[in-house]
Image (cartoon, rainbow, N blue to C red; front, side, top):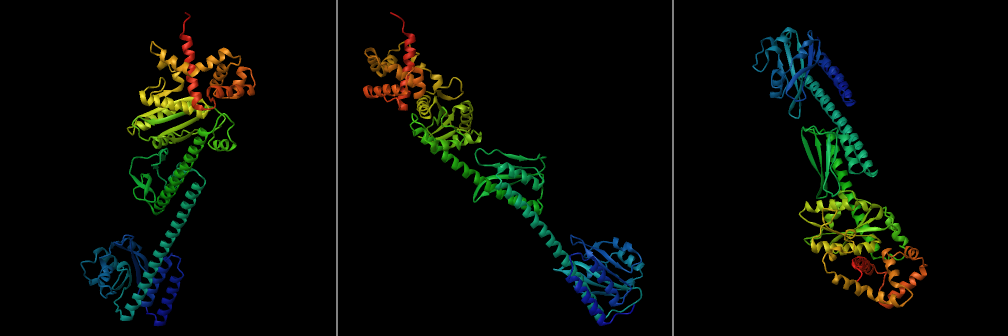
Length: 549
């Protein structure tokens, strides 16, 4: 085959360069053009292109030109062997004009035999080197003896360089495709997780989306009190990797991925963005709780300090409605503390949140937790006592409970404080609750004071408080003692008291005013009402134990 002119060579090289410039990463056609041009421009019958595998360890024929036997593509040799290996070692184009007699220990016999069968006599190999690594080799060969000059060597080297550029373009294009795919996946991950957080699906909802994005079983464990472990999918027990969920320097939880040995780039992005969104969700949740705790504490403090004998202010009623609490209901108040004198308030409050005990109000007073339950939720008392007792016990703290009456928040609080002090002092255990507790309802008329055979001391306490009223009623037509008793037993409600006595509220208020004016007994004071209630209950019990003389 006659060699082309230099002008032909320039045109061929320019054509290949133009194709490379407009390549979209599919370079197979370019390789075909380079191999055909090599045979034509150098003037050989045979030409071929070999490329290394992805690991860069084996060299395998990829494009053949004018071969009689296409099975030559089945050969794969180490990059250090054959003419390609020699070209790599010497960093130059290798020329062998008499291949049948060519002897090189690094040249595999199988390759020599295949080329000999093709009738190859003279062969030239130009290495394709990229960043000091062999990525391929371009060969031309004749079936008759031939001599290759410097121009042939330069031309084959130029064509090999263009084939190397094609390989680099393919690598760059594939890298760009991968980056674009990762970017699109990252945007998808970002959109789904961010939207989920904005929609308020919570940690569990975000975990569900993250499990779907990863295509794996996961679990999310939070350090926040009240947040249970969220598990998505079924862990098969094969491999587990945990990633910390950090909010700044603070670890607020962990994400565990099951059954995935090595994360793909898209999975790694999902994990990185997932732990960030989970951290933000944790911070948001904790801030929300802090605000709710502060609002609940402020509200209950205002309620306890509010004069319950008058109508609650609209502001307090609206604030209570935000917690799904009707301020017009009766309440039962619990005072929760610790025998050791430690401040158990934070721990007890976290227990309430852990057990999702909602629809109640709580605040801290004197190192104790004060919990107010509306009458419609008083069945939760047992659940609260059990949960807090176990929660504090796990931290080595013994909880003490005082459980107030069912009535106005202030009255119930006064009773709860008295019961708490009794429990704290005497280690009384509730009759119905497995806890160190005193319940107002279980006390009745302070039976623990009346267990003794002699009730003289109790009688003196009752008479000191009530005898002035008894003496007054003995000489006056207006009976103050029954009026005061009915008012106390109705928890200070004017309308109920008046209805029970068959008098008007004006008359009732007049009589109560007399008790304040004459005897200094202010029945509007919750502390006074609590004391009088106990006195009246003791009086009832004393009366039942008095036998006619």
